[in-house]
Length: 270
Image (cartoon, rainbow, N blue to C red; front, top):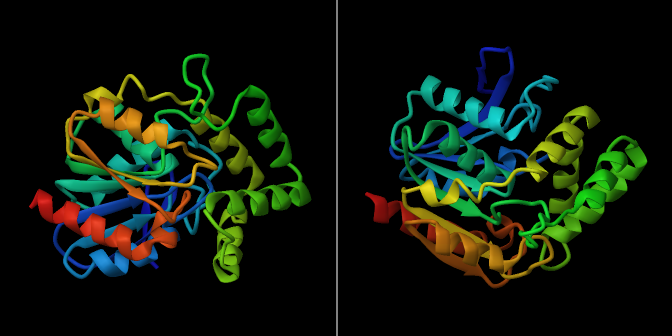
């Protein structure tokens, strides 16, 4: 089982398949690289496809420090350097997109060839001038409280999983997703949900000059299509693909279509 150790002792678990163009997948809050298994097996046929578990998530070590989006971006930079990756295509789903944008905020396009954004807007918070977030202050406080109590947290997570799908989740998928989310200690889960929710990357978006593929599910229970429209307007080089039968999980709900679109995007860059 491959791990990469960070300077502060955190050990990041990752999986990889194939050789060639490096494609690095970054998951959402509370999730893991396991969500991209179907993408690794597909893209790994002709590329070097890698999915990393961010610190505290998945099979990575449950270190109780460093749980901010900015620090996750620093971890990704260290990972890229230690793995000797160059001209990387970064794929960020949900909070993973925040990690990408914070990487650009801190390091610019260093070693990055292109990006893919799956289901995320510049901010998850409902600011006075940004109504597209999913949480206001009261909702965020409620989440922080719920996470502290195991039974409440379990009920919240099951409801959240249902919200991620356009239709009813398949029982087998719902089961392993629940287990994956509940791996996180409550302290880590509460720390990162707060930090990621209050981020606002609107000032960063126009500075990202690498090609970007935007992938959004048509179902709007979590992420509005207007977020895709905002990104398309403000990212200098981008195109958008909508997934008509998906909510927040097009890589699970419309696997073949997402894989096809990723494959086309990668070929366009070569």
